[in-house]
Amino acid sequence: MRKFSFVVCGIAAGLVALTGCATTTSGVAAPTVTTVNQLAELMSSKTSAARTAHMNLDVQAAGQDITATGQVEFAGADSKIEMSMRIPSLGAMSMDLIGSTMYMKLPAGVLPTDKPWVKFDPNGTDPVSKALSAIVSQEQQNVDPTKVLSQIAPASTITKSGKDTIDGQSTTRYAISVDTAKLLKSNLISPQLRQALTTSKAKLPPHMNYVMWINSSSLPVRFTLTETISGQQVNLEMNYTDWGQPVSIQAPPADQVGPLPTH
Image (cartoon, rainbow, N blue to C red; front, side, top):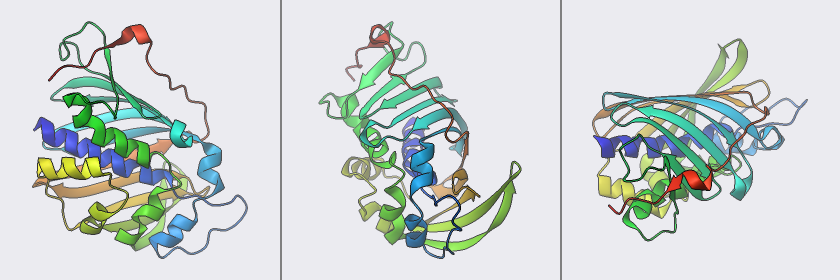
């Protein structure tokens, strides 16, 4: 159960970055979009200019409801993500991804240390770092919103689009179907994550269908995924707010970071 939860979180994290991709230029009407390649071409000034956002995530999987809130700053290799989450089987957790380094704050008693945080180096040789290197690597790759749609485009198809109102905002809704076999072979999936999925024997559906809503400023508002993975129903909803508003994402103080567990 715990392994499945982490696999779901890894898949969710990889897909979440996709919702930060669609952009357009202020004052210029967006062209008609019928393919994911066309949607990828809309990636331009808006998301990079906004640079920051807040987000709320809810994942229902394997009989558990995983909730999270966070903030993100897009800055290429120096991008940052901060997430506070609650996993019923584990409790409250926090994650900070600062560039290529991940810090995690786990529930009290989980780690053999009095320090609340641990640090994971994706290049570390210890067993835990190796186990989590797939997620760290995937987050590094996906945090750049200017790359994901173009990478996923060869495996994806827009099946439907339309207009919706979400929280008072006028939005355009895109339903996208992803061929998972093609996706797993693409550059979007790191070798580490591909190996982790193979080792976990996660059974993905032939196609993963999700929906993305973008507001009139071509910034993502909501992203949903409803699929069956390894025989378990997975429902994911990510909401983005406060684009361009200040965020504060810092690594935890060094005296609050303890050693990694040895197993």
